[in-house]
Image (cartoon, rainbow, N blue to C red; front, side, top):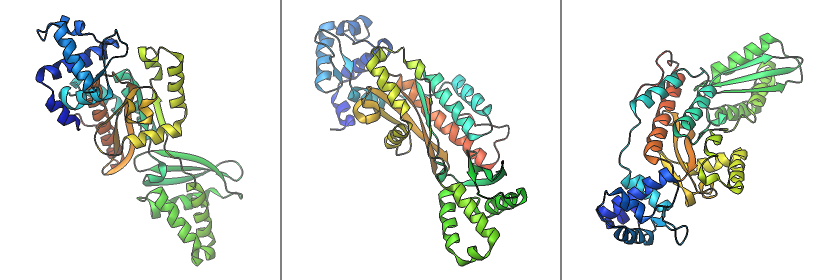
Length: 362
């Protein structure tokens, strides 16, 4: 049965009590008793009546009782119902929007610096863990490529994507190439391949190297071979994690075993990227709670995440990760706004007109 159908079966009183229990638990991190709800005096009901309603909500799967004598806490289904039907619309306060815009405007010119600022903003403004998955360089569109001679036959390759992301690597050309040749090669590749993704460029280079004319023209052959080596094993997706220390004091991490699990989750970056990508496969903000995925179930945490990109092109994912009792009414609009603001900055950078304007205010 869908959550929408379930909420239709709840009376207004049941919805209000469920909402109050969730909000109280978010603040206290403790099981909520019927007596605590009754003391609020909002419902005009006795503790016994509220206890019966809580039992009904537990039977429907929205609450659970951790211990026989304890109060109740929300389940994943309860949180999902809260997010979709009980939370109400929330917006990012104007002062927070201004704060975000100022920091993105003041971020380093390079896209990598911008991503670092974004992950910090996610963590700072939510007091949870901020996560940003960077683009896979192979899927980014080339703006320019430059070859810089180092000592001996070593060459520094600088690949700049349209969005400003930069990938650097050092390769050994086996023979020393004059600076003039490297400049000529850089110009040839930039002029002929700018606007294509790095994967498309590499595939085209492989095809050109197989053509007979590439064997005849020595300079072209050198160019293609050097370019192919430069684009082999371009950087894959990275993940920036900011604010882990902020949640170590949360009650949910009071035992060593859970702390160890948290550290292991963030240590295996490749697995973390894979799980994040599995969680967020569509547009909009996705809320993943507890048993919804392997990423959140191990710690009984939640992930609120969204995509960012340029135009229709998806570049990466950003989000907030923390205990399931996070303040969804504040976190969800925050993630949405930061995803939109980052996309706008990268789009402006891609168009070459970021200048002094920075991201537009919502």
